[in-house]
Image: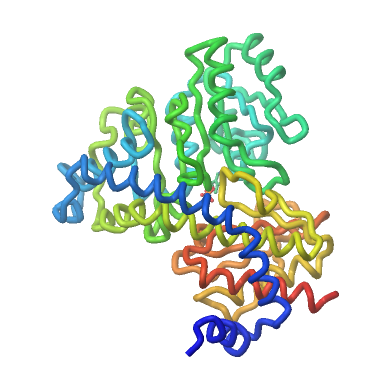
Length: 429
Ligand SMILES: *Cc1c(COP(=O)(O)O)cnc(C)c1O
């Protein structure tokens, strides 16, 4: 049997992908071979980094055992912290299945290091949506935001989509800034993510003015996309979610914090209680998934990046604006596609859903999600609820109708979503 034809027939007969789209895919995959190769190379190096951390910390079967109650002497939990610290080139780390999301992990860092009267500065424009209520620039008063506790907030906006070094320098010179929040990923904005080089430069700039400023990087969606992590270029704390990159799609929930020992210690006190810190907390049998997840992560991130690159390449051929472009160097796994009208946007998300292993038969619709200004449509057919390392797409229903695609876990599977989306958009022309 001819393997090439067999794959073609499967796409056509089992998934109803049009000949035109299959041909376009083959063309785009050929054109983007150098990009795929680059992704594989980075993944290879990160995989070796991870393997070496496992070996150096002598991870063994015993680390997968469960603890209950207070979780004293949880070998697996403490060694996992060490593994993360080594991978991230950090002095210490906290990795917990019961950090419920990235937002909680970032909030824990901010509350850990900021005190009444302090100033927090965001240097890459407005922070991720959910951070606004934590900081207190949106939402109710009196719910315990940083603002309620007397922490003030300042922000330097991006200039032409890039860090505005002059404004950052001036702000740090003229104010006693206690901590800086640096968001690596584009999040849900039409801008480039910050590269680790960018992050290195901004940290150098800030520390050159005042070495005591605590630099916190929101690393969500960025882990293992490049060769270095922000902790390796001077960040005091990096934070992320385990249902994104570092959970490798196997973590069932959780978050991590890595960085300087003195700050990680404060985060531990914040997450448990002052005096208790990070050496308590039952792992409840979750350790195995967290270990296996970080072990798989460099590969899973690479697969997801390839899905994004394919999507960028195909929508470029269709004539849509995409960010980043198919040949760009990437620093996060998100792909934005500007779909120009509401119907395209909805078709795109519904097609991504059709490519998922779970709930492929349901069709997402725009809905009024609490906390959002516009209706939002979300495609997510995932094993873990809301896991955006798995194939997913979401979009606010507003001009200029941008869809944000991320994840994929397995290129050969997730690309069905992209092909379905291309077909759907072609059909609407
Ligand atoms: C996902 C994400 C967060 C945190 O969101 P959660 O849904 O709480 O995990 C914060 N910042 C960025 C850039 C993110 O992508």
